[in-house]
Image (tube, rainbow, N blue to C red):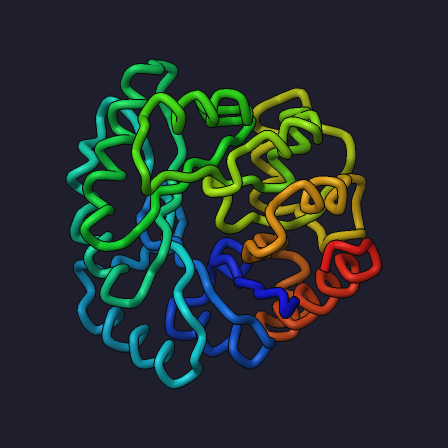
Length: 273
C-alpha cells in the first residue's frame, strides 16, 4: 500500500497556507491540514480563509499548482459561548478548497452541550461533504477515547468521526485494545508524533509538550507503532510534530522533509506500512 501522509499545519504554524502547500509538495507530502479557525491565543497567527479573499485565492492556486490536497481544517471549539453556525463561512471556504474533514474539540464539561453542538456542526458540514472529527485531548473536556466514543455514538450522525493523536492517546493512558474497538468508519486519519514517555501531571506541562516539544516517531517513549497498528490500514497519517526550536535550526522545508523521512522509516521498520 502506498501510504499517504499529511503535513499538519501545527507542525509549521508560521507558514501561511500557500507556503505550507508548497513546502509540503517539496518535502513529499500528499496532503496538508490548515489551522484556519483562530482560538484567540496571544501571538498565534490568524489565517482566516473566509474573510481574507486574497489568501483564499493564493491557497487555491498553490494547491492546484502543487497537486497537494487539503485534508482537514481546525480547530472548531465546542463550548457554551460559541454558536456552531459561526463556523459556516470558514467551512464553505474550506469546501471550496477541497477540504474533507473539520477537526473539533470540546471546551465545556457539559456533556449535553458537547453532544448537541457536535451534532449541529455535523449538520452544517453535511451539505459540504465534510466529516466532523472529534479529537480527545487530556487538557480538553473530552479527554479520553471513551468520552469521544460516547459523544459520537450519542450524536448518531453519519458524517462524524474520531481523531486519534498518538500523543493524546498516550497522555490519556488509552488501552491499546480499546482502539481496535472503534468502528472503522469513524477513523479517517490520525495525528502521528512521538514525545517523552513521562506525562506531566499539570495541564500546563501537557500543553507545553503538545505545542512545542513533540518528536519524530521513534525518538521518544510513546508506543507509536502499537497505536497505529490498531487503526484501519487505509487511513492518512497526518504528521503533527510542532517543535519550534528544531524548525528554527533546520528551516521549515528541511524540518518537514526530515519529519516525513523519519516517520516513514520508523513505520516501515515497525511493520505499520
